[in-house]
Image 1 (cartoon, rainbow, N blue to C red):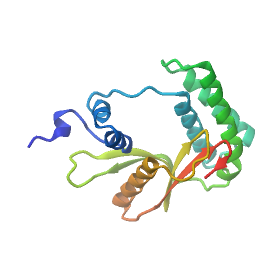
Image 2: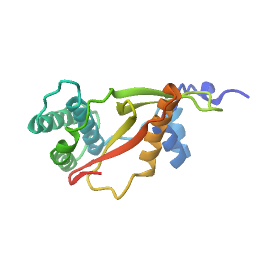
Image 3: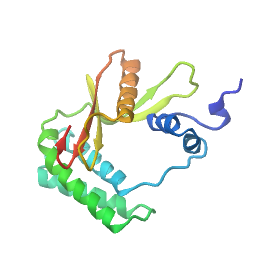
Image 4: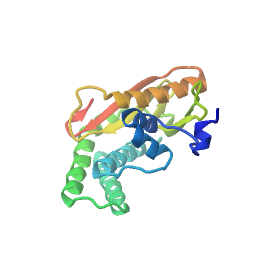
Length: 196
């Protein structure tokens, strides 16, 4: 039997592509084989801006106060919005920019007390039995004994979303495969009303 991944030029999977295929196989094929992506959104850029800022806050020797972190996050958000080819409603852009600021104000006291991670955006590679290509991805925050995945939301979450649990567990499995030690895995929700 021919390797279907090689046949269709799929060099790797990701937690996102596996979730996409699970929830909508046709969309998953478009994503993996034809490289067609869904449109972005101001909310997506909000998450990227917060993620980036927290990575910078936690760098060894970083001295970013709350006002500086808020300014960095909103500037990064503005840059992402400005440099996309997609068009968004001005009201959506404004709303998500305000969420960036509120999330940072609520989360800064907690996140600024975290230790410096061993790595930010740490690349992972997971080999699964019976699957011809690896699963690759990037861990937001890798610690010696833990992995943390940062997610932002405009509203509080009652619990961990299944897709997010799948993603962070995939990353923890990759670290276990790489090092032989299984780290704890965490999903941290950054919201305008605090962290969960």
